[in-house]
Amino acid sequence: QAVRIGRLNLVDLAGSERPRLTGATGQRLEETKKINQSLSALGNVISALTERRARQHIPYRDSKLTRLLEDSLGGNCRTTMMAMVSPAAESFAESLCTLKFAHRAKAIRNSPRVNEDVDHRTMLRRYETEVRRLRAELKESQDVRESQLQLLQQQEVYEVCDDAVFAEEQERARAEQELRLSDMESQRCSLEEDKAQVARYKQLLLKQREIMIALTQRLQERDEAILALQAEVDIRDRNLAELRWHAQQVPAGAGASRGVAGLGAS
Image (cartoon, rainbow, N blue to C red; front, side):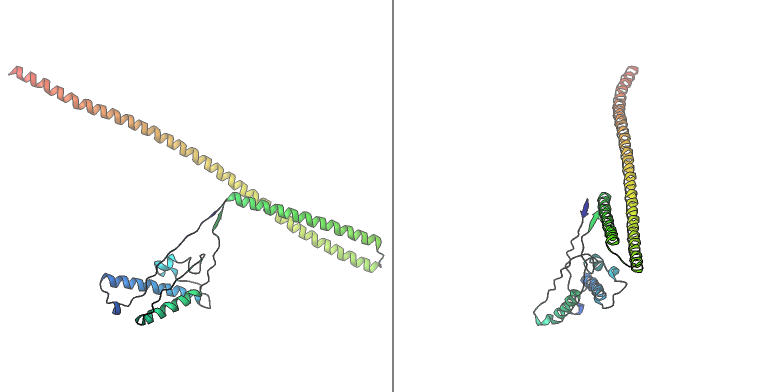
């Protein structure tokens, strides 16, 4: 069976802030610094992805934000980015920066594909299908070879040619036959390799099955031993509780008898 997996990232990017305009101090100022640092790292990643000459290294690890968005920026995701701007005149600079940022992000090219995890049985079925296809192609090539040989034989019977022409045609036919034989031999070798690979996968699956059976038996034995130990512990706890109860009862009776004996002596 094939298992498909996926992941959804929803990120709300905060806008860049200028402390001299907002007048932030203390903890708010530290948060502003971290926000601006993350947005700067995001801008560096987008610049690296949109350069004409592809970089060998993309700085995804410069911040937690770019590390989380690694698949969404040039990775295996379908990404949608929405830029929010304000029509107010005092926000003109911020709106312009936002539009430039969105224009650069629009140039990023992702390569989404289906995340499919295939188990060994599915892989074996695919290899068996491939082997059957190769066998059909080999049989078809053999039929073509036989038909071509029959045509050559008919041409040899019904055509009268000079010795030189006949020899040349025969050499050409022999070369073609050798070429086809070499192709068939290569196909046979690839088919044998595929069979060997399928056999190796079968052996691997059998070994894994034996290992799983052995592990299951060990787990069952361990569970039985744990249950037996738990039963012994419960029995010992009950015996200990009874001994404690008897120990509490015995001193009370002994104290009473000693009191009576002391009264008689006085």
